[in-house]
Length: 86
Image 1 (cartoon, rainbow, N blue to C red):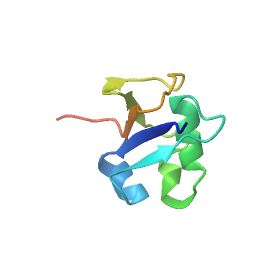
Image 2: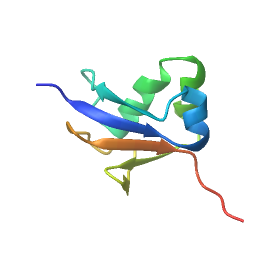
Image 3: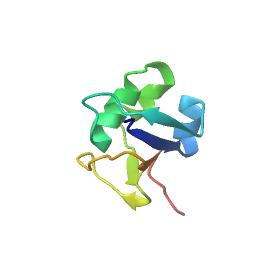
């Protein structure tokens, strides 16, 4: 059984990683939003925009989620920079 999730990237993150989204089979040991973020950041180059310590927000199935939120097959995870208004 695969544990595929849909990942979306918004705003400056989309520009940094070079795509708007992807589907990914979760590797062993990647079971939370934070672990997914670390896994993606390890790809290097523009993916470092997702590295720990960077100001990035996450939504899991269209609801704000913390790094400890658990992932399940079929989930949608969106990463985006904080939005400022004026």
